[in-house]
Length: 267
Image (cartoon, rainbow, N blue to C red; front, side, top):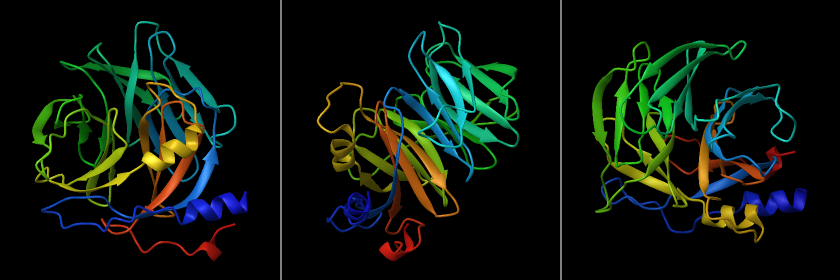
């Protein structure tokens, strides 16, 4: 395990990071890997230092779960109705907000017991969700993010994602960290960092090699990178994918993160 971890630790993308005006790949280190069941159609992911929250999608198979060990059974799990397709999630105050794919329904749960306490509605599809501490930020598969109020889920502004002369459509799972919005892209190995004021992409992490390593030769059309969770105590990003049997803790070089950890600091 230590040999494998050491190899993972020095896995980096060797293309240097470019300036924000010309975004490109950002180097990172893999600080840790955790195993988990490979049957999760991961939609939303959250970590508060002690517990994990995850939503898994598909009709008739969608659930919301809390666990302390990703490799163990959930501490609690809430199954959605068969006609509801779970999407991204966000935590705000003492509540968990869960999007649904095409039902136009935002489900709000009490974090203490997973009791459903409120339903709100929105137009269009729901994909990813995060919070910057004031607003909820939502993706819908387009190149535009929507900022909404936590109380009524009302739209306050739209943010078109731009930069590098590319079309940034299919924005999916979101995570707000260190003043940037990190986003998965459906059927793309990149996790992009977005300026929440301008919408400009600042750079990205390419998870292609991690995907190849995690899937170990298995092929599934939906086994794409999806799931980002901030580990505040270690100032890194946990990433995974749909049907991936692993979670990886990454430390980007720059973009608000500290210098990479030394190998001697790992157990």
